[in-house]
Image (cartoon, rainbow, N blue to C red; front, side):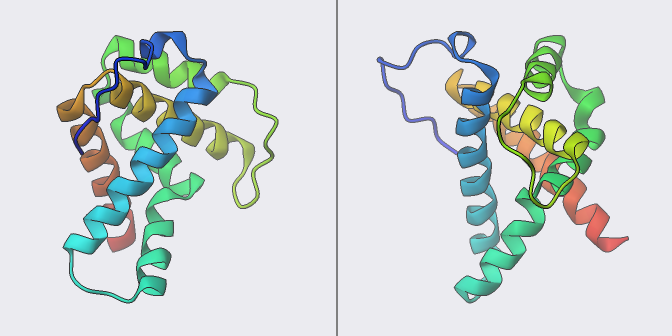
Length: 138
């Protein structure tokens, strides 16, 4: 996913973890949708159902468990900041622990995206999607 540079965007370290998660949520959603589109032509409602299997909090939490040991110290710190952030949002279809892990994951993706680290971002998202697909096969 190419980074669209904009000189007015501050360094990602200047954003709070929930703002990073806001960006990361959109980045991951677009990545998953594009990945599913490449898999073949499906109806929009089927694509939406499939995408939901990747982006729901429970799937993101499972992805985090699969990739946590592959994160650098810096990435782990960003993830933990996102996970530990106090959110006013109450999870609808996930428990609080999963929701917080998903927020940490999204914060990491937002951080990598805004840092312009496209290759590492792609690598993390590939690992995350692979973990979801592995769980679906089991």
